[in-house]
Image 1 (cartoon, helix red, strand yellow):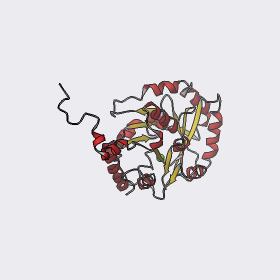
Image 2: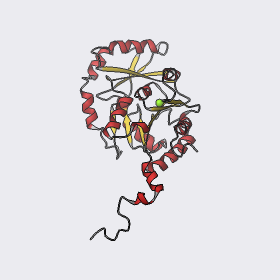
Image 3: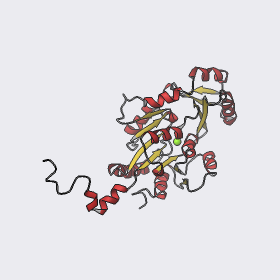
Image 4: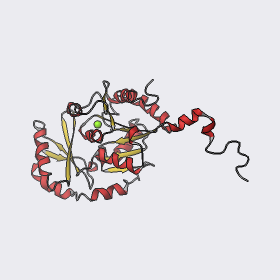
Length: 285
Ligand SMILES: [Mg+2]
């Protein structure tokens, strides 16, 4: 009879070895990273971060997620050419596309999330129509930044970008809940994403977490700019890297310190510092 010769019944090993029992009970961390200027910007520190993450992933102690404004092909480019760590899930295009492994150029976004987005009644056509007379001050970003559920512009008028942001937001207010305007700034450049109402990085992450039944208590998000705020809004533990935009630092000051950690160091070094603060194994040594 199969199994008779087994000295230790399968699944009982941990009863005989307390070390293994505690290993079994260790939480799996969900480590969620924005890419640009959170992971990128300091290659030696990114390498160090990547090595530590890989060790945790191999021991099933961590999952690595990207939550980025980049189009999916640009994430693949980063994996190949920018030494990004290997992710277990990818949230791309500021939350409107989710990807699960295997990651290849053939991959398509998770269909169920795409169907959920349809419910908002988002129309690229309508967005273009409402903003068409602003073509002196805003310009559409590259074609790969546009999706059926996201229209992205750069604000060209660098003298009063916030006024134009307010104007765009005003035009997208009706009907309530159909559209959402998210701004991300890099240096002096301002970019605007128009998305289905209530869809953003934080909501996409929340959806994925519930879909895959991951424990929220062990989720940590890290970011630097305006489109990362929604991840903090969802109440996950957070890391704000030292180089974060001043307006995001100001925004997060209203959050209780137990929910987010302001790193002193920049880029991936700030992420390393933050993961140590939250006592993720191997980072706190
Ligand atoms: Mg960023």
